[in-house]
Image (cartoon, rainbow, N blue to C red; front, side, top):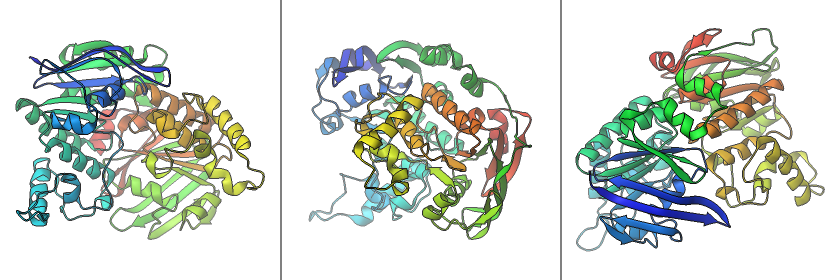
Length: 496
């Protein structure tokens, strides 16, 4: 295959720190090329250079054999390059149709927007992705996975011939992933070139023609996917020393419930119309309960109910044997509940420094007259060291950290005053193997301190690497419990 894009000796620094070091990379016409590596390894930085987000760098980029430099994303789009970023850039208050055609609305001959034509065109685009959604629907009312598919559709149907997808399957259930993969194969067969960045190694090996592994700002290996397996990829990403996490990717996990420990959280007959029904569960001190299901199974809405974000219509919740009414997040916190939502943007402030994000949850517990920035920095500094947040600078803007390190800051919010129950919704979403390993260690450390932990996820690997017991939800109901037995990713997918 002829090379559509070639990069030679690409080096990029931020504040004197090298994010990329002399990287060579090529993308053939009609190829799906996978990129994997730990958070901060440099893969997203390289893609942002290709997409025109980062204009200042050393090295050369050639498109169709000609040297090019993009001063902005607009320049890149004009040359047929489109990118879907990991953090969605949808406009929640606009309709689905307006998001699909964002920046390129069809107009009548008098210059007015053709609303009917726009809705008709958006519906056709989405139908090609297998998405059955009314184009008039407000974007923000859709589940996160559907929002991600709409954003993918916007780039795929913009006329781009080189498409960069950064974690495109991170919020998708397996059926949605297969739907997306079918489309990507058709695009490849039509001559489009696709860069597929993902921490889901199975997805990379299933859909990509070649894979490039990044480590510490360098491209350390490129190989045809047909010639390698998951262990080969993991070894080059993280090396040795992550055996427990590797097991959750490659083998069955033996579950061990904490049946003798004290009951902390009890849920009986919890129901919310249109989301879940008659859910009963319990979590003991020092236990991690995993709740797994495909997107739309109701587990994400259940997690929000446990923190008063979307209160249940019926049912009862007890903490330490006492009935609690979680009608708001304030009531939930007072009852000893803590919550990390699946979207970091809902709970963190990217332009604020790390220390302000890490202490925001305790502001109402401390006399504001005594809470000075120096005290906040001290509290945050302890969490940064404990959680190995990189770089270890509490004054740094949170948005400049990798996704994995931002998630650690989100966890740090609840560490100054430990909760009785910690609910984690998609705690490793968008993370690579190495960053997941850090989160696993943090959660296990909290478990050892007696916290009852609920981990809700659409990722089988996440619940397998964290849980002592696993509940599987399907269409709003709990359909199976796994406890004190070996369980694998295949078994979870079978039940779901």
